View 1 (cartoon, helix red, strand yellow):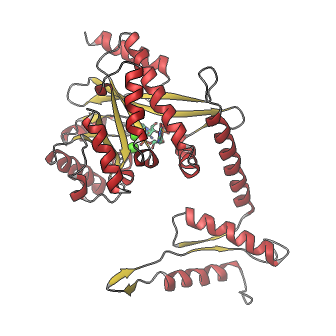
View 2 (view 1 turned 30 degrees about the vertical axis):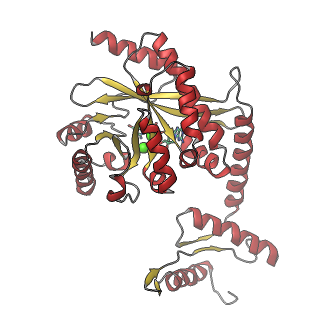
View 3 (view 1 turned 90 degrees about the vertical axis):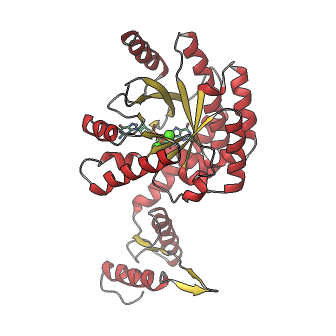
Length: 349
Ligand code: C2E
Ligand code: CA
Ligand code: CA
């Protein structure tokens, strides 16, 4: 654009372009639409020559994509820093995954209790991955799991999570903890290979565990991708006697017809609905409908992110079976988990 008076003009042009391009088109009787992402950089502020301007516009476009598409972004120097940080994180992650060993490991698991609503009994734990890197510090899985998935590192890392969870369950049993099932989060890529079935079987056998000691959580969107392979693998796991849960339920676009065919026992109601359950009538309605729907399909409902007594009471009134959240406990390292479970057992016997 050679004829703009100020930055905002470029934004207006971008917005008009997006509107025009994203209009639905009819092809062979199907309505199709595209969601454009536009990056903008300005001469001379964002670069002294055409090449630099184009490269920076490209960077800005990737930000528009990761901001959910169908939007435009202006280039900022911070974007290059962010790209640099991401690259560094990717390199560190590669290094950390390739050097996993029993004596030296940057990864660990935390455990968060799952409580039966009516009795207040602790029936399960969810294993949550932690990464502590010497250079980058403690990094949230919300940030590094996505990178692990994009780079394929989730395969070896996910395998490690399964082995480590089983090892820790064996340790729990040795500490006298019984009847606690531990849920393991599984990524989309892991449910594309029969490997998963062999791995789970091997890890259970290696630590002398029964299928009832673990549960696997797959997200709603994972279950919806590659339905055929995913279904076949979930069926094999289920046939082994392993319980399966759909994580983040309500955030994807599950087809109910498909859900009915999955060999699942539990739905985990996403935290985003629980957070505003008392204040947002829509969220309350979604929770109520999901719980009723799940029950009518014979499934157990687990609510995530329960932080307040009011949320607990509300969910209890709706008949939600299990609760998990800071109200009961944050995810804890192994030793604290043992102390928590022992204190709980002592007060209930
Ligand atoms: P998720 O499976 O939905 O796990 C629940 C997340 O919510 C955890 O975050 C947990 O710490 C947090 N949380 C639990 N209760 C509360 C609460 O009351 N309030 C709030 N504000 N948050 C609560 P975390 O540990 O940071 O994990 C984030 C996500 O990373 C997980 O979401 C899961 O998708 C992924 N993740 C974690 N560990 C693994 C893993 O071993 N494998 C895979 N594939 N993904 C993992
Ligand atoms: Ca989960
Ligand atoms: Ca979740």
